[in-house]
Image (cartoon, rainbow, N blue to C red):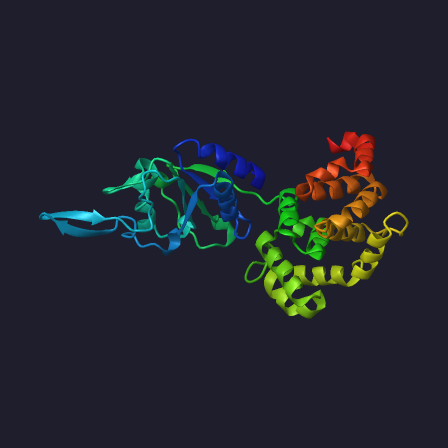
Length: 327
């Protein structure tokens, strides 16, 4: 299930009382989806790492009152009956069986002992799969049957939209546009390996250090040797920033790159550059000059942050000419 579909389904599920469990490999953004849904709904998010819990943490500890034992629930559980939010148990299947068993009553009956979950709170959970070389414990049928199960799959188009919003470094965007299969690859997962999370790390490293050649050893430790070497090779031969600036300074007449990789690099740089409104005219000119498929890609990237770009005279012309591939 694509990330956008997972997000859509979770939003619908939250309108019911049933818990949902998101299954997927590490580093792909499962918890980010939950945070995004909570932010969109403007509700609280209580993120609990199930793998760090003890079996007694949810039940609380007993105290004696009027010669009777009463349980004091943990302070981290929501208590305001008028509050609304998501109780999110991340890494749930990395928790040992006794901890998982402590969730039986909460996930089904929305209570633990004397504690009752407020009516407007919903339960979500997430975890890695056993085949992802992750520490997991088998979920019992009793606990598994309490959840709606969603399989999270990495999707490049979804990631690209997120990367544009996050302003991921243009070199990372350009490289992965030509090597989409390296967005996620667990063939060699002993240490660093390519995931959406590790490529975000690469982006931050490039911003901090300025040049990829100054960070080769760090990149190997982030995305693994094979992906890092290939990325370094791409950076060494990618269109230079000086050449890109020259194109942006004369978008009507400057010679455009012929290699597909350089075209993707140019699109990635322009996508970031248009945060300066002065660059929108240059971007509009380039949309018209690119091959239609690449023009559409640049157009969609810019639309994410500048919807009014659609009213630009040149963009209206482009849309009129190529509405068959835009719609």
